[in-house]
Image (tube, rainbow, N blue to C red; front, side, top):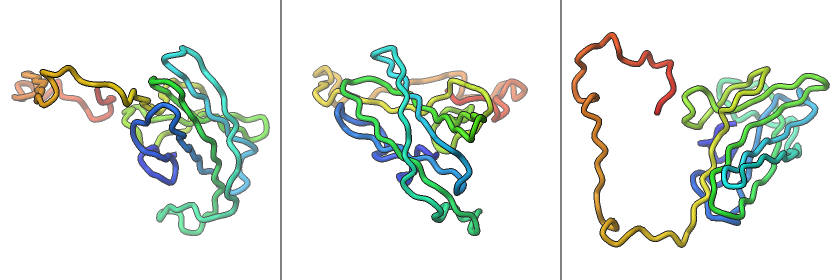
Length: 167
């Protein structure tokens, strides 16, 4: 799953309430017995589980690095009804074995990682209120968020290594 690619998530970005978001997951052909999505709704403070349906079987993986492989694509839809943030991850079943697929440690969307255990790095779907109006004096404003400690590299030994999550 690549949350930045319309093959796997449509539409990309924030959505209105009652918009349908289509989620797809790719596996190698006939490699797993089922895929589910766990969705956490921050407004309701509750989770739900959605079974995915195999919608394509034995087709191209659409991956230039694997031209000779064939894949299955699994799909489900999510239709949030109120402004909220939804976090989702995939639960992949292969007989009695279970794997979990969610966003990587950088938590910036895109390709994720499969793991044998549960981790809480869900992909985010922002559901916004289309009637929201900014306060009048802020409507055409430009806001700067300045981090003075980022302007000069006083000590290079305390720089991020590139393996830590982005904030």
